[in-house]
Length: 248
Ligand code: GTP
Ligand code: MG
Image (cartoon, rainbow, N blue to C red; front, top):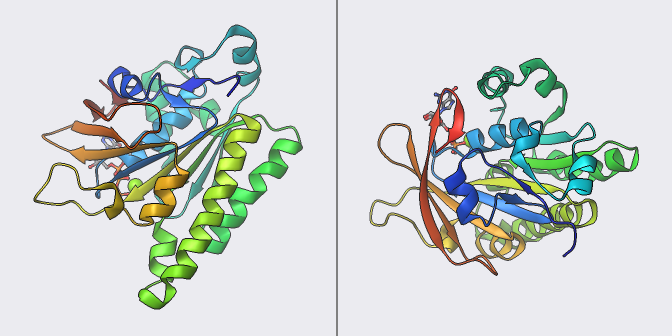
């Protein structure tokens, strides 16, 4: 793959297990239980896109990325918080209101809206918007509530597969970072549950390039584990979530 670039998560530790940061041309899944920090990571990524020091790319490409870059935030749970964006932005010396202007938030109330918004991103790009980050927070919650029971499983997996294909296409074709979140139950018997426990198991697993499992530990500390990556070893690290945002 040519012209790869990386968007920092805000944590050097986390960037390091990811091989440099959130990699373009890939779909990166953050999975974990309630409160593990998935939405915070998504917010921080939107802020970091406006920070030149947090974009790793060769010079010419970096210039293109920094030409009024925009993030699309598909919010299925109503957890996008403008005030939190402002707080994170100001913590790294950016103008919070300016950062907010460059995030297009789309509230999706069901899986059809969610899928449609993802498809619409391509039109925005073709109209000339420099969209470099696409977030789906959460990838699976609408599917989980709409397709319950065994009888609906095949249909759910099929739609989720189509949605993931749309996201992968955006990432590949337009050199974007795509970040998705996926809530999975905490397991008392293991630090990290097996990948297939995540909703959408096989479908998401095969369609995401990077999968990171998050876990809350003491205080503001979080554990992150990269697993099943096609070309990076499984690895574990820690980071923190404080009023400043996501950092080591
Ligand atoms: P679900 O969406 O419920 O599955 O959880 P999540 O993984 O998205 O969790 P989220 O990213 O919302 O993280 C919640 C945790 O982040 C909270 O328990 C807090 O520890 C921390 N957090 C969230 N917002 C703030 C904030 O404004 N300030 C600070 N200091 N911490 C926050
Ligand atoms: Mg969340």
